[in-house]
Length: 139
Image 1 (cartoon, rainbow, N blue to C red):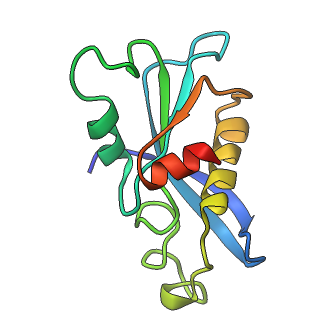
Image 2: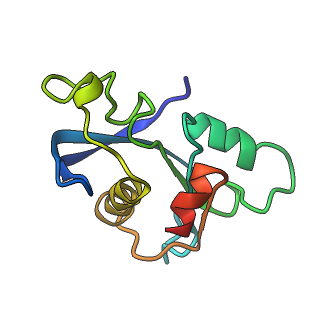
């Protein structure tokens, strides 16, 4: 598994109203953020996917429209994929089937917090992805 970072979301309230204490969002970045912070791109991952899957799909190869040479690429992992807070890595009483119900909106809200609070970016150049990553980009 490629290295990744963890953003501590604190007590995160899901769309269902449930609050998960010490929620975590795993992510990885590629490239450099320019001084104007105008080259940031977020790539959503597909269901059961990780930042590694999104990197392989969107960034590998030459002459790609999104590239670390030109963009600061943020690839957050979704809740429930085993790297971010998930039923498998969360302690009682929120483990297993007691993990909060997660929506696309919950993932997008967490990603917005990552981009604005952790990375200090106020506007993205692009939001993209395929499958469930595309749904996140749409939101």
